[in-house]
Amino acid sequence: MTSDYTKTIELNGISKQYKKFKLKGCTFDVPKGRIVGFIGANGAGKTTIINAILGLIKVDSGELKIFGTDYKANQSYIRENTAVVFDEYLFPENMTPSEQDLMFSKIYKHWNSRYFNSTLQRFKIPTDQKTGQFSRGMKMILSIIIAIAQDPLLIVMDEPTTGLDIGNRSDAIDLFLEFIQDEAKTIFFSSHMINDLEQIADYIILINNGEIIFSEEKDRLLENYGILKCGKSEFENINPKDYVNYRNSSVNCDLLVSNKEKTKWQYPDFLLEDASLEDILLFYIKGEL
Amino acid sequence: MNGLIYKDLKGALNAMKPIYILLSIAFYVFIIVRGGANSEIISSFSASWLVGMLSFLIVYGDEKSKWNKFEMILPLSKEKIVGSKYLLQLSVVPLSVLFTFLICTLSSILFVPVNHFVYTALLTLSFMIPLISGSVMFPLSIKLGTKVTRIVLMFFIYPILKLATAFQDGTFSPEIIQQNQHYLILGILLSVALYGLSYFISVKLYKRKL
Image (cartoon, rainbow over all chains, first blue to last red; front, side, top):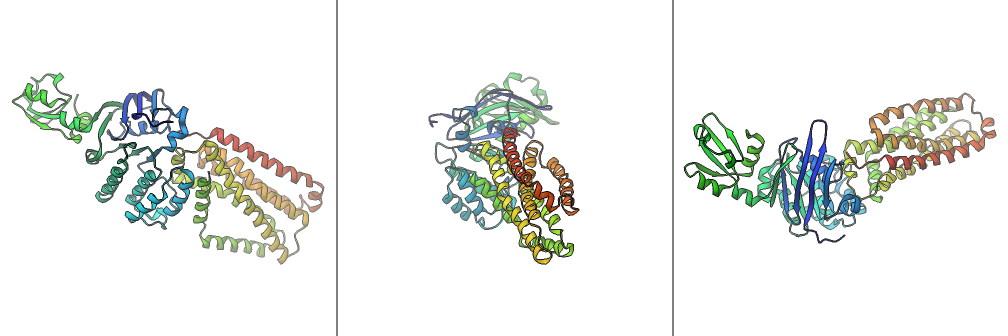
């Protein structure tokens, strides 16, 4: 295996049918050396995609490559270089972090014991206490430290900051930013916490009802998307091709547009505001198209 | 694989609080002292069964803490992941034999010496019981989960009790054991073979899929 790939994750037409849910030909890339935020409502398909990336589900069709290769060809390389932080603590609660250190050093080839212990010390996580006695915040920070100490090329995280208080979330974000300093490393990060993603993600992928809506650079998204505000009567005169989605209130109508410059020129009399990531997500999920 | 064995051993040791160990010792001493001669038979069988259950408890603990989900993404082959559980179970077999030895010794000191042939048969069975329970438990828990396996393991109590009764009521008298000693060796060989076969079945059944 060489490291001359440019896309850490490549999904091409991934489909998976469940009884009540379907992933519909999902296609996107996760560039190497970036933090990619993966957003969508509950049940949109985020965890299913993550499980597919981790090789935990068999997809019905499509192609999936990690580090430019697939599980069949290089399973052990992919697993050795991919760390995972799930939305819950999955480690034995009757072990102490010191014992975990010894255990993982025997499992992972590149386990960085020095990093593990110094980071625990930095976050004041006791090394000799059973982890079952830790708060949820401490357990999640510990899970993130365990993932980074594996010295992986890719960290996949499924809602790691959900339920954390502001202090723990800030600690987690610091850890991600330190990890990503090395340009060979990539983070793929699903979250409901849009603020966290706005703060650290380079790219945003939005999934809705099992379908990838967009995969864009975050700065370009914030630069291009806007909210056009108009009255209900004026809404009738706006060409549906000029907006992505709309939301109605009792008196007026808000429209999400994907090209602010063009809209400004087309509809100079209307108020046009910047759209935040949260606005974009809400329009796609709760919009009326 | 060493890491997984370490995890399971450490988990078992951390779960064994001194008070539980003291209570267990007190329980067995009480059974032997109160039960008199022959009480070593039922004590030995129950101790072997309990030792056989130890690794089930570890598998159950993994399921409860959801470690088994994390286990699926470890950079280890499924032969190693499954193999670590089998090695752990194998490592507790001497414990079962040791318990039987201590129970029989205590009974011999307190009452009449345990017959040499009965002694040998009990030691042999204390070796076989954890192996057989592991052979059944691992493939079942991999395929069906620990909830179903727990119920199946309960059914083990019946044959173990029947066997213990057969020793106590004289069905397996020292003379009969002496005449059929070769079955003890055959039993050991069969339980080892069953354990090996069970490992291959478990590897085949183990899936890294949710």
